[in-house]
Every structure is written in structure tokens, then in C-alpha cells.
Image (cartoon, rainbow, N blue to C red; front, top):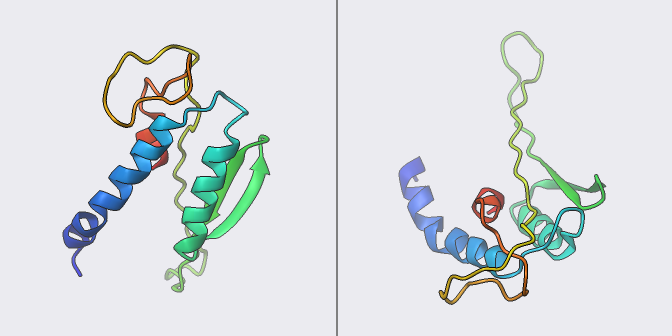
Length: 113
């Protein structure tokens, strides 16, 4: 399957994930539900998961099977904040915040998904 086809085939899944995270905002260092969701999703994809970094942090390690010509493994890091903001959400869509006074207002829900 081509990369574009793979992305298209998972669009609904990741849209639902982002909406779920958006509806359940958690403030910094309190992202217990969010970190559980992220860890479960990574594990379901067969990715090695490490938890508890910075209290609620999650690290997923995806190991390649090929060694580059120089013999030294390469690494790529991807980082996303998971925390929400302490502010009310005035949006009226179905996945608006279910927690009064907290919302994802700067895209962390999308980055995390």
C-alpha cells in the first residue's frame, strides 16, 4: 500500500482519536487518561512503550530492522505535548470539552493523535 493510501485508510481512526482527546482535556502533569490512551494505541501498533517520564510522559520506540552502511543505527524523534489549557471552551461541536474550565486550544490534541 502506498503512503498516501495508508494515510487515507487511517484518517477516520485518527480523527476519532483527536476528537476523543479534545473532549477529555487534562492539564499539565495530570494527563493520566491521555497517556493511557496514547500508550494503549502505541502498544496496539506493536511499538515498545515506556511510561512515567516527567510523571505522565509516554515514549514509543519503533526499532528498524536495517543497519545503515556506517553500522551506526539512526534515530528520529517525534515529540508532542498532551496538556490542555485552563480556560473554558465555547465551541458547540460534539467533541467539545466535557470538563468545565479546560480545553485543547492550541493543537496539542491533534499533535498527540
